[in-house]
Amino acid sequence: MASIKIRRTRKGITYHIRDVVDGRDISKKVPARSLIEARKQLALYEYEKMTKAMPMLFVKDAPFSQALEEYAEYSRHRKRESTYKKDLSTIKRLKDVLGAVNVRDITSVRIQALQSTWKDDGYSNKTINNRSVLLGTILKYAKELNYMNEMPKINKFKVDTKRPEFFTEQEMDRILSTAQPFLQSYLKVLLYSGVRAGELKNLKLNDIDVKNRLIRVEVSKSHKFRTIPINNILEQLITNKIKNKTEEQIYLFEINEGRPVSDFYHRFKKLLKSLGMKGHLHKLRHTFASWLVQNNVPIYDVQHLLGHASVQTTQRYAHVRMDNLKKAVESLPEVLTSDGKGCN
Image (tube, rainbow, N blue to C red; front, side, top):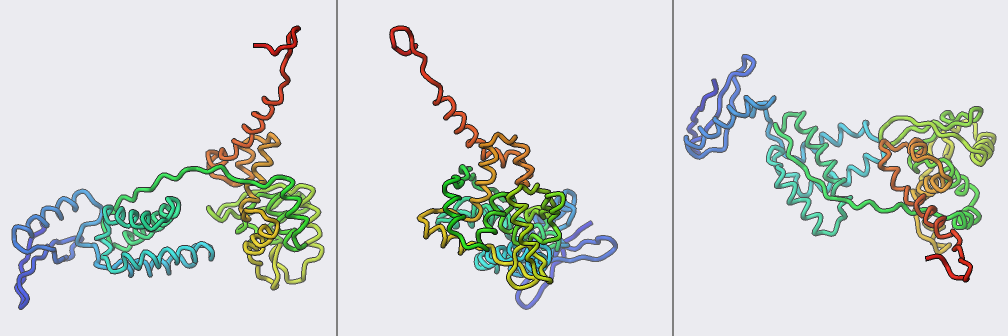
């Protein structure tokens, strides 16, 4: 049975909860200025002990900055380098506002206030949600380290789903005919395979089966694999690249032997600017999906090719099919009556 111990020091009286857990004497100072308040803390502890897997006495005191540092080190070898670097940017922001706060004092109310501050600073709901998800992951890790005994609830903002934009065939003709040969090859693989730029960056030669016309892609977001068929355009391109590869080449696209090239983000943006066009590398993936839908490829096949975990994500491209159907309806001829007037 837990009890209260009173300690008298030069600075005053302090109150501690004592208990025996697994045969060990445990003691923890509680925030109380009187015996009545200490007894309330004892009642709370007894309740938590009955309802939670981790009693309050096991929770360690730690500033959130410590949990951030330990999580950063933990995740360094468990995430892709690009994802890890992106996380570090958010971790720095979290450290600036929550670093000095004790982990167990990070409550739902405090998190809501932080989200409101980000909102007032002009950040989008999607950005705030991404930061909140990482914060939740860090707090979950902190709980495993016994820095807190209950996870705070973290709400997300509603994000409106935008229709994905894609390039037309005419626009792609202009882009590919203007691009330098190395960049042109890179863009063609993105366009005709639908892979993400990060997936293509890490695509190795031994992931490509030219004989069976297949590409094995490691899905960057889930660390799983999916297989993409190679069409005639890609087969010719990839065959030429393999034929001209260097002896030490590992990746499909690389400049320094054994090291993948960058994702060409800035070079592609510069090319589009010179053509008076707007877009980004990911728009090529949208183009791949939209062209498939326009060609009546079933949505579940498109889902598999894109590597979406849920078909709801792929349904974003359904509007392309609907636009085609609208055009088809508008193309119907008007039937004339014998008096030359349209039917009513």
